[in-house]
Amino acid sequence: MPSTTTTRRGRWVGAVVLALGAVIGPLATASGAADSVVTSSSVLAPGLVSTNRTAFYSASWVNQSSSTLTHPDVFITLPAGSTVLSADPPVCTVSSSSGPSGPVVVSCPRDNLASGASLTQQLLVRVPAVSVSTGTTVTAQMIADEGGNDRNKSHTDTFPAPDRTVTIVPGNVDAAGGCLRDGDTPLATRPGLAATNPLITTATLAGTSGLVCVPVTVQERAAASPTEACGAGATCTTDIAITDFVSIASQLPRSPLELTFTVVATSKNMTWYKNGVPVVDCAGATSLPPGVSACITGRSKPSSKSVQLDVLWQAGVDPTWRG
Image 1 (cartoon, rainbow, N blue to C red):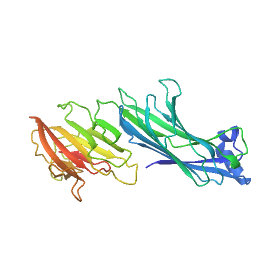
Image 2 (image 1 turned 120 degrees about the horizontal axis):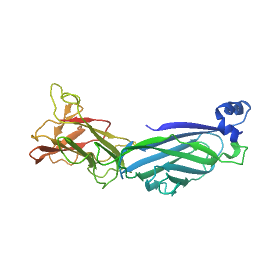
Image 3 (image 1 turned 90 degrees about the horizontal axis):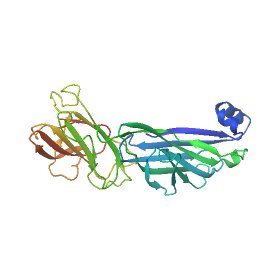
């Protein structure tokens, strides 16, 4: 869910009021002066992104005051090395504030924001390459003139959106994420199946999604016991995979996601569990049967000590997978 910030600017806004807004604001209201009230929200999806993969970012502002905000300009600050792949609406220009090693600043001038109106700026961003997992913050602010609600004409007014954090991970860890677009290569966890890496998980779109992109993460961890995330009364031998889909639209993707689990095992007829419930077989299917949220489309043995399971999955939140 997006986080939300409400920003108030009184008619007395100036250098002192900006520094002491919590004190001066009520006095301005009590004296009969009008306030500009702007509510903002932001989304960054997914919150874990693999090196050089795509993330979706959106920030919105709603003018809840009685006057128009004029000459608004949205500024979004991205991690150093990021690349803006597209913007909606396509009104943005990009610069680096401190050279190649500094953050990437995106400026998006917008039309005047009337009373009761809202504006949203969306970006598709390719995150930079990293060699170690790196946490960073994306910020956004709208700068505009409050017009009739602001007697101080010597400054512009700033309305921040909530900060969003993202973790960028390299390709040699048991986690992967990105906002998948039609035709993208699959997300994949650490390569090289071995006793020290007994599970490899990949995720891709099985067909056209109908969305700007589909935010997905896959992560793996060792199980605490043979029964964890396994079926009732059963024992499992594999590590646990956790997949997550983050919704950025009112509808689900048009087609399911295609997951591949490659595990250290000898029998391709193992029972594969989703949230402790056996996943049904649907050999060769290209779409999910009615009423089924996941099914196994293929079972194979890449080697004598490995098994590969191909699964169609209707995107959802945090299912665990194990066999």
